[in-house]
Image (cartoon, rainbow, N blue to C red; front, side, top):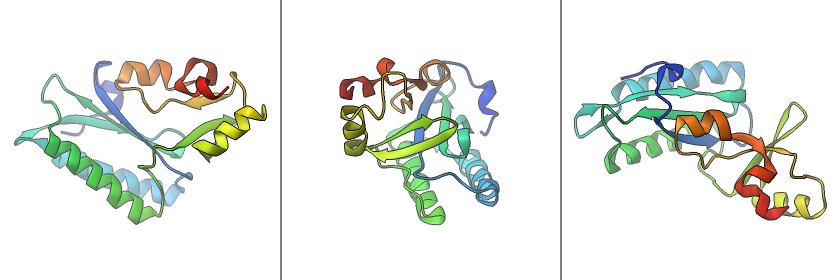
Length: 160
C-alpha cells in the first residue's frame, strides 16, 4: 500500500540507495512512476506493505516501511533488491554499491569511491565538518535527524 513518505511513523524502517549521479527531470517522472507501481504491489506473505518513498536531491532513493502493519520478509526484501537492480539497468546508474561515499561540496553532491574519500581525508580535502550522507540509518527518525551530518558525527569519522 503506497502512502506519502511524510505520513510514515518515525519508527518505520528505511533503506537508502544512493545514485552515482543525479536523475534528470524526465528520469524523475519515470522513476516516481516505477516506485509507485512497485510499492503499490509490494507484499510480504500475501499482506500488503504500507510503504512510501522519498527522492532527496534527485539522487537518493529512500524507501520507508511501516512495520506496525506488516514487516518485510526475506522474499519481500529480495523483491525490493530486484526492483532496485532493475532501476540500475533502466537508468544506467549505480544504486547498490555500498563502497562509495556521497558528501556535500557546497550545494553540489559529490560521489566518490571509499578509497578516494579516505585519501581526501588524509590529504585534508574533507574534514570533520564536511556534510556526509550516512546511508546506514535504519529508521525514519534516524533518517530525519542523522542522515545528513558532519563527517565527525558519522561512521566516516574513522577516516579523518
